[in-house]
Length: 206
Image (cartoon, rainbow, N blue to C red):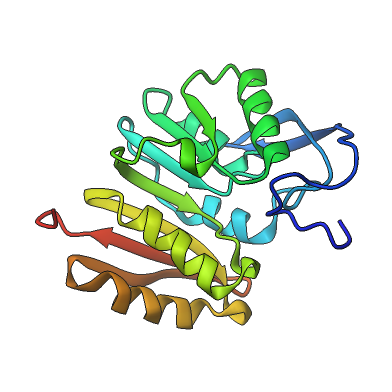
């Protein structure tokens, strides 16, 4: 992508879509991708660690994918929990369009794709899955996590995959201090240089 970052709202260059065949929820799927987004040619290693390690999402309720890219996390949630409402958010408009079209190709009517500011601020989430954009910078990353983690329902769980060499341990420490005693922040799994962090909101937390 050169100097064009995947977290740009409007990626530089004309969109040129191409086919992408990947395995999601145990089945090969034919989708579309394009340049100017995160990991356009495959399921990146961190996302693969998350998808292979997290427990199944709730069968119903509100589920969230932060930074959807072409949609591997949101689509997996939608496939595994067809009766749940899946929200896929991204700042990259090309990512949003791809996820929306890939959801339609899989006939997933339970996925809503939107910019973060277009999600109802009163909405709460039972589960969050994310490969957060670590390279966006610490201040913006912390702001993003505070926005969404605080919107977990009581008893809700967030799962974040973070590369160890990009600060997963320090991020875990920061979250434990930031979100306080109403949340439990633990390392649930380690694989291929990635940490899977679990953030659980206490059922008594308002």
